[in-house]
Image 1 (cartoon, helix red, strand yellow):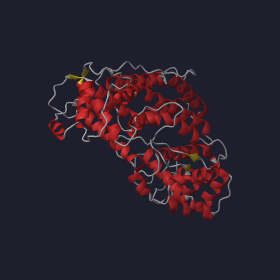
Image 2: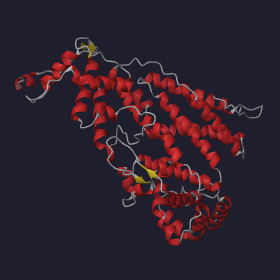
Image 3: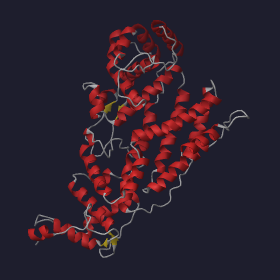
Image 4: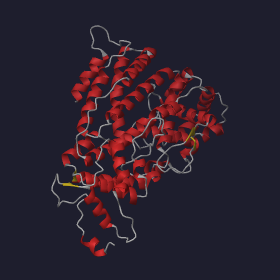
Length: 483
């Protein structure tokens, strides 16, 4: 029987943050089990055995591929034993099936786009706090230089997506210079490049870093891995397969009318109104906008119905400004006439389509529902930016549907679909570069991927005129300057 005196005089060896032990010191699972059993305060608590720790050892193997000997007397690095104890306690005390929560995403399994390692959100608050607690403990075993490298390369999901988008847009601009006014050829180039990227295999040698650093690095890659795993499904669901008539001529006439009113020449992306003034813009141009919505969707829409679309359309435009422009402000004139028309058509089209979406997160109990039903218009948009009360999958789906709508209205869906295939390939392959748990391996894999990707010449042999550099030669030089 354990006594309170034994517990009180115990000096833990296997806790993170203990600075009394020398670096590189070793221990055994037998010693770890003794410490865990001594720390139990209840006299009726069951004895912890190697079988009790087996789920932890197996969980470590599944998430990062490291095998830890199950021999109770084999010498192990003290840092490894600290990890085992930490994950055991979090799995038992954290009120969560830890290794289900942090398992890597798998094919044909619903992606968890709500996974977070910081900034807890309402749906996964307790889970995020568990991850944050683990990361905080692991940091004590990792040098400041290594921590800086990990955080510098494995940035947040929005920052990583911006980096990829910047590189993608560079390629797009170069292709635009070559295929001036030839969207069909440019779309083919995107398709060929996507095929080449999908066939690419990143070089990922085995990791050789410490167990605390490996798990810390793994957790920092996990959100992007989940996003990449679910992105193709979002792109597929967001595509507009039918029900929209291109209205390029009518949109052009609307631009001319708005331009005359404000005495300004307008281009396709010219901003004419703000998010805050969007409802007023709709009221001002209600007859014209109603005609455009009816012509595009084929659905009768009264003036009252048009105005009823504004609240949800405003939320779509908020997502555009936040996800695409990185801005939360609503007093900058960034919305073009096409942006506004596409937002209204997106909502009107969805009212008929009624897309069903069931976002997933660990421990989910909510059943999901229609896309528009989950936008939760009863809460103010300001709360959306602060509390993130709409599941991330819903935000991504409605935003990508709006992007698809803008192209459908102009009759450029073939081009848009090719661009999205290219983006999906880029994201998926970047996630494969993060499958190592060693930041040095990841860094080399990412840099090599960037150069190899930009150096791929599509099988269509996309080239500039003979006296110019090819698109991929320009891209390779750009990457070389950046790195």
